Image (cartoon, rainbow, N blue to C red; front, side, top):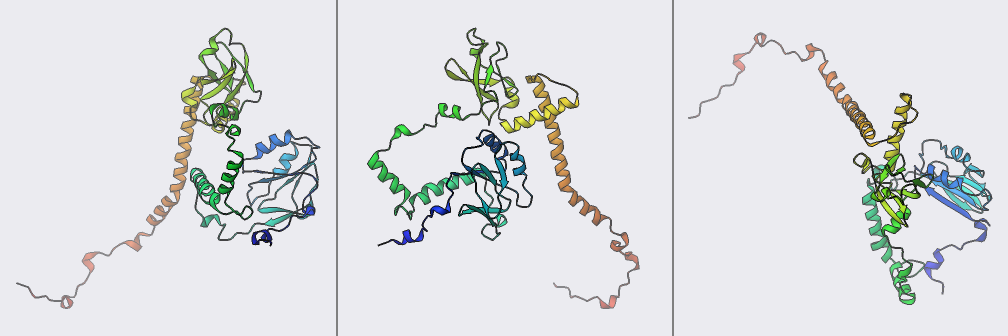
Amino acid sequence: MESTAARMIPPLLPSEFPSFPLVGIGASAGGLEAFTHLLAHLPATSGMAYVLVQHLDPTHKSLLTDLLTRTTPMDVREAREGMEVCANHIYIIAPNTDLTLKQNRLHKVPRQMTDEVDPKRLAVWTLDVFARRLTEYCQEVYDQMEHRALFQSPREAFLQGSLRAGKRTHTLIPYSEAFLIQTRPTTRLGVAKIHQSRGITVNGLQYWHDCMRLPTVFGQTVHVRYEPYNMGFAYAYIDGQWVECIAEAFLQVHGRSEHEWNLILEELREHQRQHQLKRVTLNGPRLAEFLRELEKDEAWLLQRQRDLEEQPQREALLLSGSLPIQETRQTDPSSIEVDLSTIPHYEVYH
């Protein structure tokens, strides 16, 4: 007898899907750089189709199609209603729409604003709170709910599989320092030459370790990596191991992320162009002086923002103070006539 759960799942028809692989790639609003790097390394005749889904502003026209056309020889198109999916093509989702695939054609579904999805009616989640709640849901709610295809919870299925085949702990990847160092990014070249007195240069910063003064070490060209969330540290592969190096301007860059450091470098380059300087060595004292200037500008901008926020209140106060004086002027007390006969009399209580 067919179960109720099996009847609820519609059968999968081969005609609903293309005969070649279809790859879906998603990214947030800042995913343009990742899309660009990915498409630049994909072959033009991979035999696959790609659908790029990015978080876009629903009120503005997307320029993603024009930007990605310059990075790949494949045909890049914005997804249209009823467009047939072809191999070696890239399809970009349109703003304020969802995409579905049926009979090898793309279909646009306009997003509808309801009370259930209206962000103004929903809670504002910070990233740490959202991650904690999502973990709680996955481990304590979804993991213990009965799955309609398994007829048991995912946790029960996992425990049964562990009893039959073992936990296979040798396949687990430990979240150790060796794993973290492999996930950290590197520079465009990926290597740097060790100088006897300056160490290595990574992203315009100089990093140092005591072993770099050894005669067998300086002068080598080694692989380098850096910590994207703290530019105070970089790593060099010396004598078969990764060595942690400290930035020369550690006090100025410690705790600054890669994105913040890129903004600082861009501001510094603009500052040099304005002063007609072609190339200036970025040392610790110069960086500290430049960061102090940026902090002054930042303080000025914050104060300017506060002033603009206070402007409506000041205008309201000035408007109320500019009313005609005759409307609020009181009459002279000496000209007031009082009828004494109308004043009530009260007995004295003893």
